[in-house]
Length: 408
Image 1: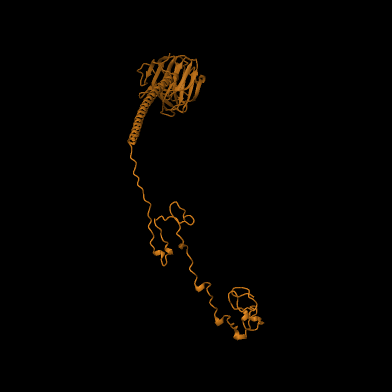
Image 2: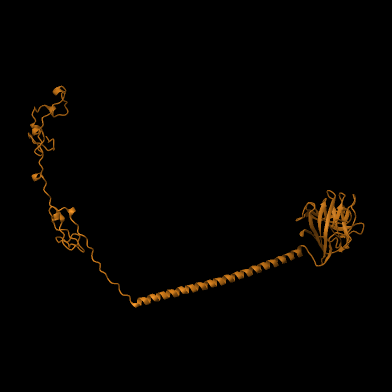
């Protein structure tokens, strides 16, 4: 059996635990063969003891357990010896933190300090702590400067001044050079631009002259210059009043009017006192009503069978170039036709029409733009004239400023 208090094994028949002194069940009175008193698995009898189990008698004398005696003599623990009775731990500069074994370290504060804990009755909180005395500062006077240092400083300042001055002079010189270079470059660019502009102007003049020479030949020999306001220039333009069946050729309103009233016919008016072989012939033309007008050149109208070249411009912007051998349109031959590029179409639109006849080469122009060049040797010279052509309705064409330049 074990002790119910400390668990130590109980000797048989022991009245109390030899370890803690707790009474054992061996000293409890009553038959030992009654298992219900100590066996918790057997329920108590409900009718016994008034319905409640009897309170077992206390195993302790007097009913209370004895107060255990303190293991220390006198009931209080002895005051332990403190480490402060030993010499204080050594400290100080150059020494180990607690000094060498058995040798206290030097006190950095100059005198031994008694341990407040080794004094009887002293309260450490009431002890005044010693003030720390810092090590003395040794004042060392600065070394005296020698005269060599002053000379060296002045020499360095002088070198710096020289270098700065040289840099400034160099920068000014470079700036001047850059300015001069920029000015020279600007002047050169201006001259180059002027030369370029002059060359461009000259090139344009040359190109214009070449264009005029190659596409619209002129000469200094202007042999006809007639505003076509009347017949005062002496070129004897035809004059005939128009009728319902006959075309007209008349000066009217400071211009020359050529008309054709019959369908399928055209009317031409000739400058009878003219005869040109190689020439440039131009005139300003405006279709007032109707369909077409144009130039007659290298014409011969004195006989019964007139012959000529006819350059016709239609108000829709097309053109035809005919060769007439008589007064019958059946025998006429078409040398060229097409669209008149640059022609101002419609009624009451002014167009400058012209031809250049030189030998067998015949060139046609509208507003100084070449339309076509034809080679034909049928006629080499003749009169000039103007025409009006009825295609879809009665036609009237107004002409001004006729000019002819004689070509070599």
